Length: 183
Image (cartoon, rainbow, N blue to C red; front, top):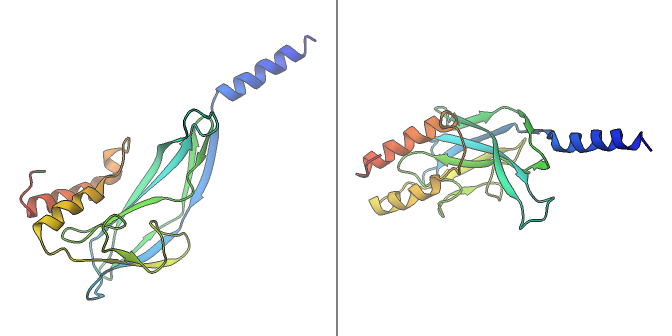
């Protein structure tokens, strides 16, 4: 009987000490173009967030999402972008990885993907699939009202370090200044 108590103690300590879970995302590749002209849009930010999901095992009203990592890149002069494989490890108790990275694609004066209704992608969905080249079309916004409303599509969620979305923040400030809003 004495042997059972130490084993039980080891099991409990193992459960309470946390869990390292790892996952690979990507690679992601694509091109961002003007929805009307088909011309490439250089200098567009492609921002992806990777999350873990916790709490679903406990059964207390569903799960919750937690930031694990984020990456942002700019499109080149051909409107193309590439995000290499992201090998991530998270030390979180009773968490699992959210299946896909979340994305925001934005350039001032254009509708932001996926939130703006005029955006589209050649593969159906709201995020970029792994290992497939996608073409994302962004509509040119014509009025200040459209541009103001579009700013709501740039919400990235909480707890993401500012250095991870520095370019997105700068481009949002450029857009705000261009339409007369204070940053």
